[in-house]
Length: 138
Figure: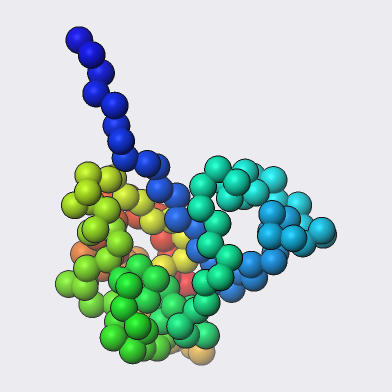
């Protein structure tokens, strides 16, 4: 029996909404020591000319996973991502990928209590369509 070659590439998409590009040694910062990220950049795709369409984390994150301008998906901290909105997770799943999201979510709308965003569980239907999800809202 011959094994069929999988032509799909692995996708690891790392984005930090408050991460400066030059904070990686592969991008020229002599003070940064980021050997593992440097290796990922060398063996994969390192986009150095990207800019955010919005200066706040929630609209930026919504824009990144939907491909829409922030005012069409998550215009501010208090507006959640519409659970019916297609995301990169839906696109990748339709291409046969198993997806996962790990880290700060901040796409369920901030529910302020006592002057800070409340900690709450994000129900599966509000997790952007990812197969695996280990995230937090606050």
